[in-house]
Image (cartoon, rainbow, N blue to C red; front, side):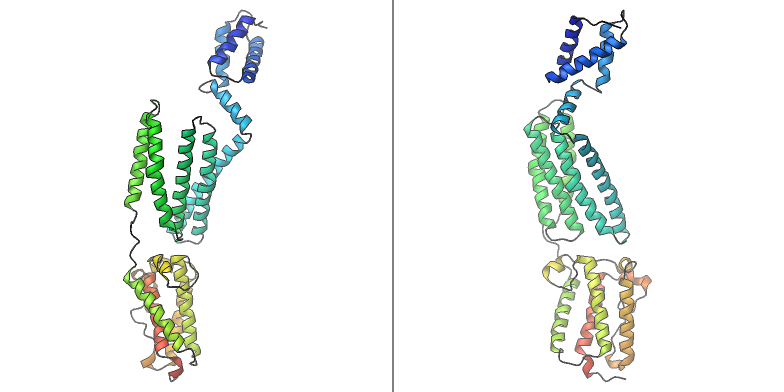
Amino acid sequence: MYCITDKQVDYILDDIRRNGIEMEDLQLNLLDHICCIIEQQLEEDGDFERFYHATVRQFYKHDLHEIEEETINLLTFKNFYQMKKFMLMSGLFSAVTFIAGSFFKIMHWPGASVMLVLAFFAFSLLFLPMVFVLKTKEMNQLRDKWILGLGTIAGILYCASMLFNVMHWPGARIIWFITLILSAFVVLPLYFTAGVRRAETRVNTIVTSVLILGFLGVQFTLTALRPPATRGDIYTYARNELLLDNLSKQASNATVNQLAANVNAACNELKLSLLKEATGDSALRTDDHTLAHLRQQSLQALFGYGNKLALLNALKSSVNNYNAAVPAPVQIPVANTILDAPLNQMGAYSNIDALNNIVQVQLFLAINRPATVAMR
């Protein structure tokens, strides 16, 4: 058993201090632990300094000061490791869910919207705030904490703008412009000026700033400064709906034929389904807000899943029943519409075309009021 001297104890304590350990309790604990190891494992005629340096290297990966940082984290942030683990799990969950949700959306499978919302919420409200909390514990300068905080807010706003845009929620453009302004004119200049002043971070700061600037430039290029112009066929649909509403009110006292009522009900169900898919709204509306969020979608993809194909077939059946019961001059025309096109040719039509075709059927019924039609 090796007997350590007072001079060697002082040597160990001085070396611990030189390596950046400033907490007195931690210094004494490390000293006591190292001395016990030396006394138990070093032979009496062994090389003290060589054995000491080999022993102390077992306490850290890069620098002995890491022990003090870990100690401070444990003292001031008792749930450090649990939160770090939760941060990694939330990041992994959001990444996997986002990829799966994107794939589901591309394939037009049900559940895509739920997965995308969960992914965005997990990433922006769990992962990013946890990164901020944990990273600020490692920073000493207040400026760095402010930069990280503003960057985290910009990241959350970016996720929110993408989510609002994907889900066709109002306010997506406003959130996106705020994100661009905050990122390009506040976060990036602060990060660049703080990083280039330090020699050890200058190169990484310049490279990272160029990458961020390039990303923001690409995103800004894809940003429409003016609201997107609504297509003329969308305005046509809105005018047809308004005309239909006026005609329906004029004919409100007429005795409506049951077959015509079935056609109208099938039309409304299919229109509602198409509008809900395109705008996320569950009501038949043609206000400016709804029209602004109405996107063209291929019927080939829309009728490939869900109940839309069943609704279309129900509408075709109702129209056929109506046409079979009335004379030829007042039969509902179906040529060159979605009611006449086979399913494998639906790619030539969009949801806007379908809405116009459907409302035209209803206009025809409203003009040729079933109450005045002589039944066969």
